Image (cartoon, rainbow, N blue to C red; front, side, top):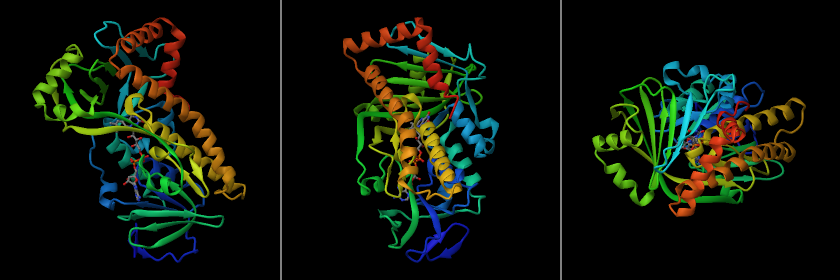
Amino acid sequence: MLAIHRYHVFFLPEKDMTYDVVVIGAGPAGLSFAQALTDSELKVLVIEQNDEDTVQSPEYDGREIALTHGSRAIMKSLGQWDAIKDEHKGYIKAAKVSSGNAPMTLDFDTSGSDLECLGFMVSNQRIKQACFDVVEKSDQIDFCFGQQVKSVKTNDHLAQVTLSDGQTLSTQLIVAADSRFSQSRRQMGINTDMVDYGRTCIVFTMHTEKPHLGIAHEMFGYDKTVAILPLADKQVSVVITIGSDQAQDVLDTPAMALAAEVCTRVNHQLGHMTLSSELFSYPLVATMAGQFYAQRYALIGDAAVGMHPVTAHGFNLGLSGAWHLAQQIKKAHQSQQPFYHPKVLRAYNSQHKRTSVPLYMGTHIVVKLFTKNQLWAKAARHAVLNISRHVKPISQLITKQLTQEHA
Ligand SMILES: Cc1cc2nc3c(=O)[nH]c(=O)nc-3n(C[C@H](O)[C@H](O)[C@H](O)COP(=O)(O)OP(=O)(O)OC[C@H]3O[C@@H](n4cnc5c(N)ncnc54)[C@H](O)[C@@H]3O)c2cc1C
């Protein structure tokens, strides 16, 4: 029996398409997409393998998400931004990038623009919470928790998902937001580029003695990369990226020794620092689907593009993709065209590819350049930093990339 959110129990006979769209995955991308359809007449079912409590009250997972201005604009129009308390929002006013022991830094700030900051910091936990708080108010969206989508199948006439309890549901369109390791993507035969960097990201928060002034630091060392990102109050998020073979050593480091190391990396600019959360680790695997659609099927969020976090674009991209797919669907539906038609999905695919391919490739180059220890790579990153520092249009271009003013 299928338990649908709001506690009514439902049977969906095959071919009775109670839902126009079935979304797989109640992560931030799936929930944002569902929310973006609430001003249409389409009925949406979100299927999530976790139980309702997990989605309703997400746990802290160490991820502090840097959001662009474009993302804030989308989140505002979806009602998500105002659902996050101000005390949970951080502001990136400036960023400093350094390489190895070189004294120079590449600096970015908002001078020359009318922006109040480069971007915003909100924890993944708060984003997920806001996404759910907003979407659960809609009568058009139902949830099916605690069920995994085991298989998907589509043809000219319908799309079907089979759940872990064996039940099959029919719908007009499946939208998969089922993570970078999407099972449904594989079942639909969509080829996917996958890069396992052999590196692990370790994240945690720290309390600082001195104010961080909203400055983000990205320090590309020879063995590890350390990023320090400003959160609300005197809190920072620390992101250590290291070879996976050394990750356990970092995880086992006593808190005081780890704090001392971070203090040293940032030249004691933040005064005494203490750990304020546990440590979380994420192995780094980037993915890019060959195309973001198939017959009556579309991919959004990490299922479409799973980014390396160094350029902080994963959720930003996922959100803009979810938003644009919803706009294409609504446009078609309003003009009484079939919203699941390949033409509609192709338009989303082209638009999202145009945005994501350069970011995906660019991030890959940055990672390669800044994680190799050979002499050529060290020389190249010094050259890149030097040129970017002195050629204003380059640093302006990077700043534009960082802020992404327009969604
Ligand atoms: C350390 C770190 C730092 C990051 N920093 C940033 C940043 O600064 N800026 C930024 O923009 N992004 C950042 N990201 C990326 C961002 O966290 C992700 O892009 C985003 O969370 C992905 O959301 P999603 O909804 O696409 O996928 P997910 O959050 O993975 O959600 C997928 C959902 O689908 C469900 N699911 C999966 N399979 C099934 C199934 N078969 N049936 C039912 N349900 C299923 C899962 O349970 C899950 O709830 C970072 C990531 C990491 C790891």
